[in-house]
Image (cartoon, rainbow, N blue to C red; front, side, top):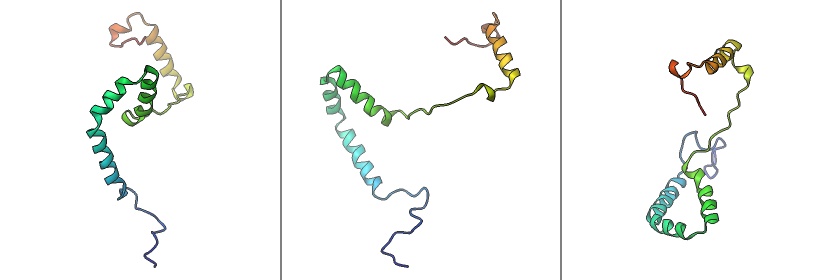
Length: 101
């Protein structure tokens, strides 16, 4: 086997990239060290630019939510009927349920 070439299987699953860890640490330090300046610069931006920047960095702060599809076929008919009756019940909230909306 020629050791000059990487394994055809690649890096084993779960093994961290040796290069990315130091780079991530450098970027984390840079971000931390310059956060005060970033906040000052952010405050000087026009509202439109602040919103744009905020929306651009948001995915790095809050994980993106996945779409969830639910079809009525996935719920048994008796559960749907029970749910509808509970929603229409005037004592719904007194039964320990909370209305939404």
